[in-house]
Length: 147
Image 1 (cartoon, rainbow, N blue to C red):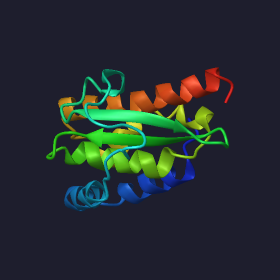
Image 2 (image 1 turned 60 degrees about the vertical axis):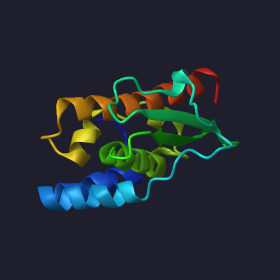
Image 3 (image 1 turned 180 degrees about the horizontal axis):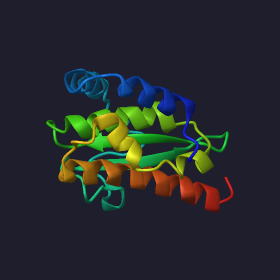
């Protein structure tokens, strides 16, 4: 089994014991914490290379290197109704930023279903997986560059 960051594992454990309505409320709480990418990282119009093409909510992802060899992950979600994308951005920012790139690079897409539920629509699932793909790729690039 893939090693996950402790904060992500803990969150997944918490979500195992909630019903669908509680899950929705928790995800809305995460979405409410969303803050757009800081201007020091990127400004509109955002570069296409950061665009998550599979995401219906028009998400963008950036990785910022830290001096300790880890990365911070930043997000923009252009669709104001993109609550799932915003919630997932906050979850990744809180649980993957500052983690070793070898761990972040291997976070599997099934964690999305652990958090959002098995009934997640295909379109929404593809968008959230696309956001994770961008983070995974950034971590792999960091590893390839020699951290």
